[in-house]
Length: 201
Image (cartoon, rainbow, N blue to C red; front, side, top):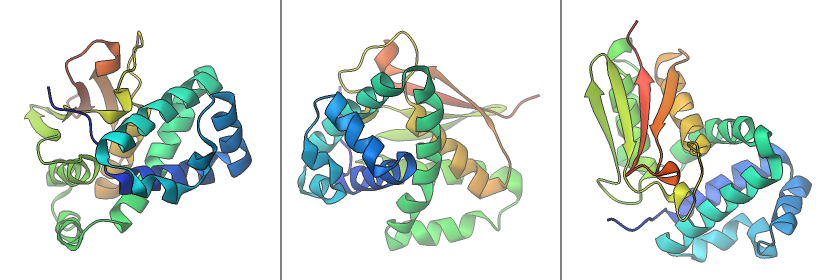
């Protein structure tokens, strides 16, 4: 099984987006409540990590947020994921930005898969970490590594940040809201995390 990895730059952007989204004082409270390092208040701290350390931190922090907010965690993390899309694209290498410029002139129905592949390239630490498949009439976004689930166990799927990113990516590409369902999650015993983008009637 492939080890979990996450780009430290993605983790850095996640912390910046999270702190802005819930407020610096609340973020400090989450860290204190969960006995996480105070240095995690500083987004730049994560840039010195390797991909394994960033993945570990990403999972631990999301677990702490779920514990802190309880039932409200899903909505908060979905919003953070949605807001993370723009910073990830701002940080994208020039090749990814060139690809993004080619997506939106396409016919609307043809934009979804390349947009999701663009997200997969930004979110995955290595080629093959995430794949996008056609399963007519729907699309599947399959995260084989899923660093947010590292050492996590839950009765239900927990990948709310990824779900928010997928939603915002598709809205950016098409201007439309989409129904998305995480139908398998590694934290809930799945072999990978699989999101179905429901396009059929």
